[in-house]
Length: 179
Image 1: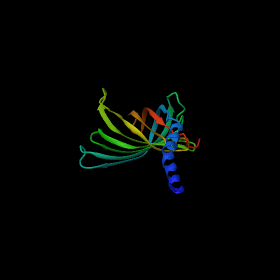
Image 2 (image 1 turned 120 degrees about the horizontal axis):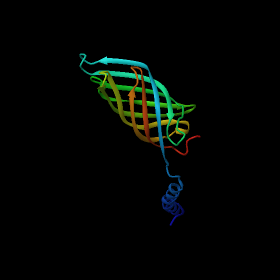
Image 3 (image 1 turned 90 degrees about the vertical axis):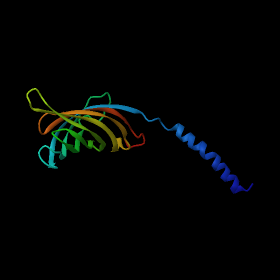
């Protein structure tokens, strides 16, 4: 057997063992429970009626606010929140989706969400609007670089321009991200 053939054989036999050793020594991803409450206020609202007054309306909204951490972990306490949302509502009901960006210093976390808006008449015959759905982390920077995770949210309108959102879920952090 030639020397180059022997080296190739050793390399091919050793590669799986090396890969297995590296994978076995990598720390397991830790699922971290997170939860909080966003207090938000619209900064931009644009409504585009599709047809008559009873028909669907497309909404493009942006809002900003803060996060209050309600979980046991130290996830974005007092962090700044920006929500960019698109909704298709008929009489205040329908699907909505968007992106939430949470920022605290140099650390950011972005989640994509989708859900439903539900509007009913209250006892005083005034509309009461709530919404709920699911979120998934899509990116992050700083200590949240490589973040993954998902969860649920539920919120309600407090006024025509203010709302609150309670959210909960789990995230997984990339342990090699800068801290």
